[in-house]
Image (cartoon, rainbow, N blue to C red):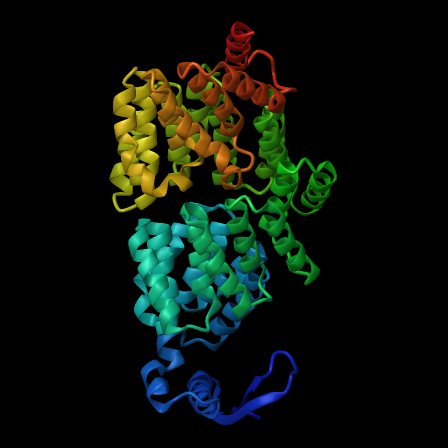
Length: 515
């Protein structure tokens, strides 16, 4: 009304639409709106039953702790709307605009970081997380917890501080779904998966209208090899019109494990229409699992061409490195040095250094691999998974290539706590090292650990190769019948594999000697 504003704040029952509480305040001028809104919120909280002590404890002027700009708050709110619907790319411009209007808008930086992370633009995600943490004094108590989680998770990689932050958040705001969902996500990465089920179930109960909770619950069930239950969870989410690319990726994985060709096609059709490069990447993984690296590289090349249209060097570099890791895994080491060099010219973000180092270490190219290990150690000294899983795995691969099997096993002892996060490499390398030492029983334990946990990485090429490891372990234990069975299981999985792959050639020769 002219320069005068009336602000109405309502709390409604989300199921019925009934108004539970209402508050109305006035502001003399646009610059007073945020202050008046904060006052209205405090009064509304009292009407809703919050105790005076709680209101005083958590009361903070919105213009001081969130943003002093009404337009920045509006842009942030529009970003949150897109973000909540998993439309991460659409949310980014709103968050960026909010930050342009208020350069100290901590929570906007943190939400922007989350969107970049979901789009695999990790360097931009770290930059935004660091900015959010820098301005964390300009955040409410709940926002500070989100900002701290973002910083410890994306910038320092300190898992203990990240977990501590999430636990405090969960205890402080027990009806907030986000800390439960984020804890579930962390447990799906490192286990235990039963805890992931517990946290994700609570996240879904608290907020059944968000796709992320259902995806985490499904991944948790998959980690326990409970594929049918995972499928039910995802189908239930779809029935509520909830969508997320990761939801379709998991349905593709489940269909692949269950040999459901029609189910795989359904998900590929969705991806081809919604996100074409994802469809190519999924098919590359399936071909890799089946021992078809040439075909996998063809899908990979198409994904790279599609990704070039978006201009993300990070994603292109990661796709290029997938070929390097694939070649290294299947013993085709000649092109690996050139491929890793090409990728690192595009991006030297953490995940790229890790992938390049792993490929080089697998191919026993110790010098270049060690150089990347040194970079990672220096740049990410607090990163839990880098220092307890990734670097020990690379060092173990180097030592195994030098013939130092016992030292390789020793280097991997630190990895046991977080073995789940290693994409089967800690178990596979230990198994290979025990084979070199002639310890069949110990080798079999490591390879069987891969076979028993298919749901951790359903399309990992190390899964079929673990059958070869079990066969060789059985030979060391003079169990020819078990060895024959494992070779046969491997040949079944690789029935359409490229015949020239060294491990396949060797497996046929070894199997023929058992006849």
